[in-house]
Length: 246
Figure 1 (cartoon, one colour):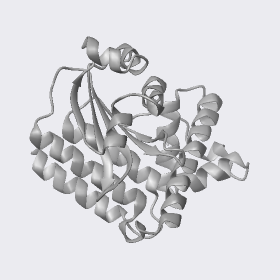
Figure 2 (figure 1 turned 180 degrees about the horizontal axis):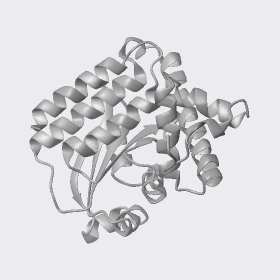
Figure 3 (figure 1 turned 180 degrees about the vertical axis):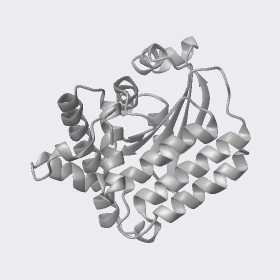
């Protein structure tokens, strides 16, 4: 399928999801996955600034621990930190260059150990507001061209609108509540991933996929289901374990 056709389908999918009381975490998770598909990169993550201006992981194309740790490592250094503060993209960064290692001495070696050689950071911005960054990683030397970078920025813009909801952007107290709510929701999901992975003796990635699939099929928001699991009002036996016959 041509990328243009697939891109049109993705934006229709996103538009259809932007209904009242939509699940922002699930939508951002899907958007991260679509970035990998449309941009031909190895991994993608969306990082959101907290109340102290430090970047936190809000969604990722997969839930592998090493990838999440790599995103999380960028609270004080890395391409996303620079992108967030400058509001401009940082693209086609070769992580094997000595000057890049010198610039980000804690981030770069971990990225290389994880198997990535190129990274990109795209600002989450709307007009003059920057609230985070879209981080892309590649395991090959493939570079993003100008069209790819424009598409990455368009996807990042969609993520920004999803988080902030444009109609309330100028209301700072509402905006802060939205940002804090999104970050709190991610913490709850992280806790549930660990609970289910331990219970099923499986990886957190597999546990998350099973959890997310159940929430979708039963029209439950990820945050709502997470709260019910953590407070003991939901029996996790109702969720089919990874690999179990449905």
